[in-house]
Image (cartoon, rainbow, N blue to C red):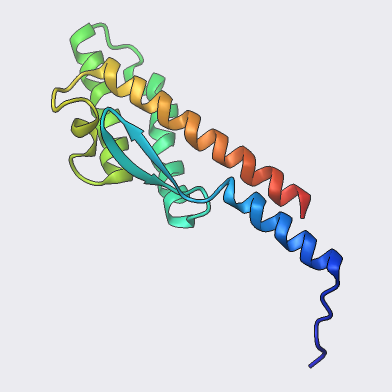
Length: 131
């Protein structure tokens, strides 16, 4: 087997790579006094996130044609509860919103989480493209 010859350039490149990877390391998402691990490099996390997020993307279909405002809010709240509980474990959604089911608060928490994941994913994409 041929030995790998690391030059100074290789060492510098690896050091830069390591520093870049720190930008996408697992993060802790903190919201309303609660903390949850968010790791865009964890394949299981991202697969689970993608699957659950599709239900949120499909939200307009879920409420299409429903004229009852209360029923619409219930469907929206249930979708977000399923999203957060599916991603972070049973009971996570209600922890985020002080144990009271509130569709608006769930949507705000979702928006905050998405901003963190989007930022981490963008950093990850830049690193991959630089390789």
